[in-house]
Length: 401
Image 1: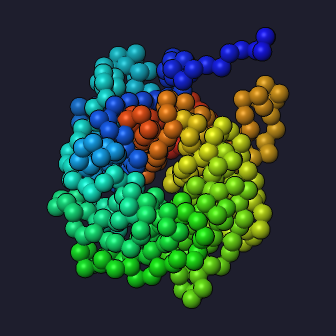
Image 2 (image 1 turned 120 degrees about the horizontal axis):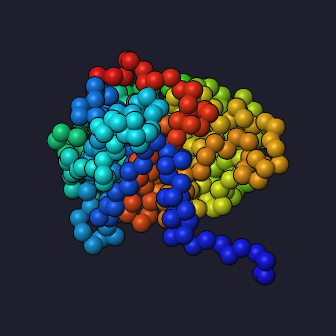
């Protein structure tokens, strides 16, 4: 319509984002992969004393070749400027004369190991109690167990269709949940390695449609949550014969859920209607609050392991959004309100296609890896000038090797 601004194209939005990178980020690295990765996760790599101005961190990624080539589970490493540990901007340090603080001239993600994988990897997750062990799930719902040092250890078959739900228990070694498009959920005990090829418990009646995600509770070893295309969010207790202890009817199908790392009662869920919903386990009848900012379906959610009340979401709108739950209901000026709700910290607009997966680094606060449909993997850390980022203390000594 006359008088209205023409919407920016994807490339124009990317160019605008790129021009603002020095203001919004302390570090950004972008790598073009040969094939898209549907999954990404940081490995718990101890932060060593910087060598040559850099620290090393490691990642898990996969391939989705659409049958054109062999698929692989891959392990990668990236060198990061030492300033990311201390909420400093490498470029600012370089301007002060510290040339060693300059970020690498180009992405330096390096593949350190790769193993052949049957079909595409839809999710890959490491076992918290033994990070040498990594589980994957593929487009047929088959679960695989890999050793980082020795490759494929076992093949776990139960599901009969594509699977995205995959979650290791943070509290019980080897307890692994998987969920599938065939409506089923399985619990595996893979602590025994190659001997654990049969699920210890299965559910065919938790949901009446595709299971999009399953996650373990971070404080209670017996609780897990699931979300499905049947527009239900369910909380389950594996101690009971009928494990469902609570059900929430979703406005539209949810794609993802996450439990807080800091509060035993708080969880978030999101999906097709683009909102992020907050729930209290003590009363699941209605959500506590919902947050608006995405323009398309939300596909992944994670709570920050470092800062209570910080949630990150990603979606089919090419965006990641960081939220601060402590700012819900805060007073805003009219100008601030135009930029979004008060709990919105920042929008990462560096992707040009839907975000497949992301992960927050547990060792380096605010460091995120995110991967998109168009073969791009980004590693980034938002600017320390953001108030909630700037007050974060320096990296904990107990995670420095």
